[in-house]
Image (tube, rainbow over all chains, first blue to last red; front, side):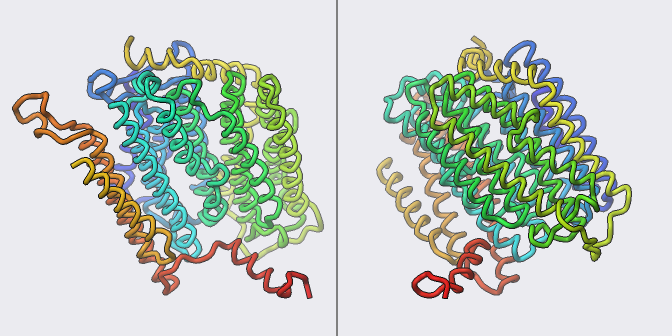
Length: 494
Length: 125
């Protein structure tokens, strides 16, 4: 058990150390990176199976009992997030190995990528507010390096904004931790769950809102999203894909975890979150419609999609949270795939500007298929995974009587479809012309890039095909979130 | 002592916020550092009043709370690392652009460019 919980955090760190040691040989680094992620993927799947069968599991680092020791906890939500994140990180690493550029040119890519993995895993598995802060910092520190890898003028400009915004969010997080500790005397999440309930409701609301702001900046909800569409598109494609798929979702995960576990029902800012969710959807999708660059369109869509997850949280019902969980799982896979396809388009034609693209359908029919499947899924067209996720959310919204947010979410789906068809029509339809210029990739490289993208498309289709079991799993995960006793009893050994 | 520390934290955060709002990268870096220190002082404060050094003998009842001290050490190390990175990024920015100012967003520049095509009254001439 200890190995299953500690492995996803420790193995990537060990791999990163080894990877720095063999920095001279890129092939050795590749072997270490892929092996580490495969081992972590297998162990996190085992963890998921175990957690789904036996309920919440936990480990106390150093053998000290819960409020004093440092807890690593996995419940269904944490385990499923870990599995999807690691599978996605593995696919993107294989893509990066195939793509000429970032991975090949920089000795630091592999170690930093593994440290990012460790940070993400730690954020999912920690049972302690301060360690959540540390996990975020490990993850963000790695992301600062990745987003500025190469140091081009444009990257430095947008990287600076990204770093400063993230730092301010981290500082606010530390401030929130100081307030929480001053008012309760503990930072263990399970312990806080009991002790925060004794505080005056004003103090509790203040802490809850401070945490919403902190994780709101990290997960790019309205009005704290402005840094995202500016900074993400400038990084190398694999890096953008990982950031788009994963980093904001770690913020959403932290929001789900803290708002459901820490605060009792009367402090939950449900209406506020629903309003924010609606605005996030609408502003994000309008931003996307006005853009003319594939990567920027997709970046604005990240913002828009975050709104759906927050909507599930804002309902604070089992059905709503189940919808949010299934949406996050679907979104991580689909969004990453779309960015990888955008990278393939850019690789082939040398541009991601819609005005300069045309008729790629004849030139690269495989790419057209790889794009249209996740694009339709993102818009929520049946029978793809996005439809399953949106159906779950709409159903939850209707049964909770939140008709306004349901209407907004459906309208935004339509606009999402509009902007996906805009990419499709401009890029794949129209008269084809061979852009030439850039050398076409060698066959093994192409196989790696297309293969890893196709793998993620298959994963997204698998979510759609297995939507029954996936939904029932999300429902169990949501039950755990609403009824926190399983979590707290396991951690505090009651 | 608590009031003094609270005021110190407030002043550090206020000065830091002022600096972060500027457009020069060097000021922003210093501002981030000041805000970080202000919050670190607050973390120390969250343990309550000071007391005797913990774990070195004496009556355990008089010990200062050691947990915030452990937390703040971690936070200081993290702030140190990030500020070092930020400084190198600011230096790189200065090397690339020969300028210490935060540049406009690509989008802002595009909108500004489009606005110059219009007349003063906002109508396309």
